[in-house]
Picture (cartoon, rainbow, N blue to C red):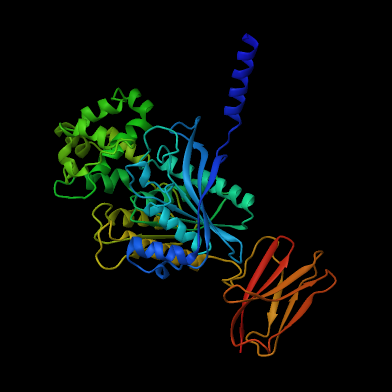
Length: 496
């Protein structure tokens, strides 16, 4: 009996340590939707026709359980999210992530395909991308129990990266081709998480991932400076007063060890007792319980700083080294120089996350030598919440302009790029395609602008040119694809 117990313990230990970040515990097909049926769903949900999202392709929706880092870097947790795969997209798909905003309850998380975030990432797949929407950690009905790490840059980034890894595995299992193009987006907290993910990849995973572009919307990036000063305002009213409460609760969980070393309360209940006045101290613990249906945030003060004790407010306001500012600084995102295109998107009248924090970090990046940073303004003087849908429309369209595949006609390049040319261009009667000598056979395809293959030929490695007749084709734009081994290259051509 003792041998069996030891053997069982050994098996459990080996199983636990055998799990790696990004490993899949389970993935379940929860929906298969046509572009037309999803169009109707979008219109019913938003009041806008689905065409505004560029819906074109059918897609499958998978709920995923996977392993990622917990609060402490030496431990793993089970996280959840949604992965959406386009059906019959004619090219290999880029991977498009969307980071969600503030969620109080499990049913609000992206892993619920009926949530607003589920809707968004389904729209991403209907645009021909592989969609990836993490719940982050300890959120989602099938995630490990615990309190979510709200505005914690590290776990936002690692949970996103590990779901990207899981999504690649699912693509391979389901026969969906994907490229190494990676598009990072998200709004509000998701603006913070998408930018945290870009930083994490550049600093620690550059050999594994290439970020094509990052487009953070409505996010906060200078938490210890602009955001903290905004929280201290005696006049700033917000419809989301619980956001400050969530940060306090989150950091009391994530930084328990640090708080203990500082002699500060490292128990969430004690932390609330020491920061928030009555009745908010006891009320908040119930409001912020993801398993409790109670979410009466209207009982909170719309000016959040009025909920905290005078002692905490005065210390936070007057001491630049106050411990809570230090914790916020751990999650600020200006301590690097982005080496990928960055397009911040913000409403100038956003009071939840003031645009001044974007302007500050942009200046810091420019001072440090970043060369591809821009700010796009959401027009119409829209509030933080109201600017969310315009951001989604902008982000999808922006990433479509960054996409490189067989439909865009933008030539792909890499270290093994094939030297080739197409002439004449424009052409009236025929196209000539010529390439350098290669040890491989070469496949040449001609696509319509909608992705239909209308000409196909394979040349052995002894042949270095092909001609495609055009006289029977209508005038317009076409795409030539040349494939050599695992590499594909594209050019747009014009038929006169």
